[in-house]
Image 1 (cartoon, rainbow, N blue to C red):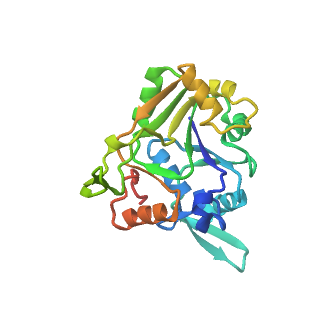
Image 2 (cartoon, rainbow, N blue to C red):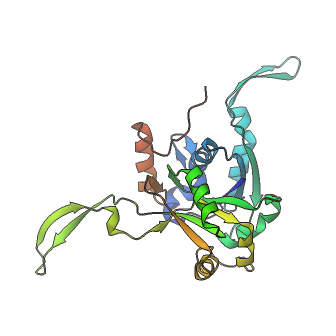
Image 3 (cartoon, rainbow, N blue to C red):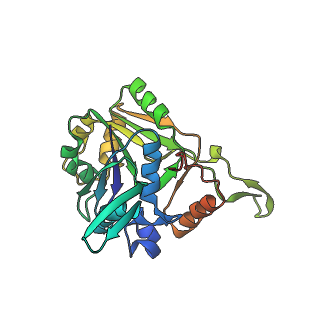
Length: 261
């Protein structure tokens, strides 16, 4: 089954980084967050990727063009103009890099990669800016049991900031941690879609979360897989620093893969 990653947006809320590179190429621990997302899927055996490029998409293409060499030990014989490949740390990935337009909305990006899906009846889809320890096997099983066109993963993320208890006359009565019950369910990506999704995309001029998903919900064709583990977006520099800190502390919950020997 193929995994489609939406990697074409401009990432305006993290403009300190995105003015120089596409948001999915912003690094955590020296690797683009896009790489981290692909490692999550790869750990569950999903290794055939279609990446929807857009804003500064050439940088994503250049990264994968050079990736093999950067992950491989090489010997260059200058005299004979030859090279020898030694140990390689390259993942067994198949990566299709599709230019889906700089200003295309997400529904349009999905339309533009339709031909690359081949004859697959279902495909995975996620955003290029969020990581978590989603159980992709459980997600797939849930999708099959529900029998709907679309399954999205949802969560109630733990608040990073405490809440205040304030009296009617404006006095602070106490502090408390914000818990998951205080928040609505959020769509975090990590979706499974049936090919019938293309009947809902129209001409591609909308965001997926607007017209297409709204109509799927009205038709009773969208299921929600509840993820109660870790998930975090990378919308701001603060988010990036938070993820970086978790990695440096050795407590990154989204690292569900084993390091290559």
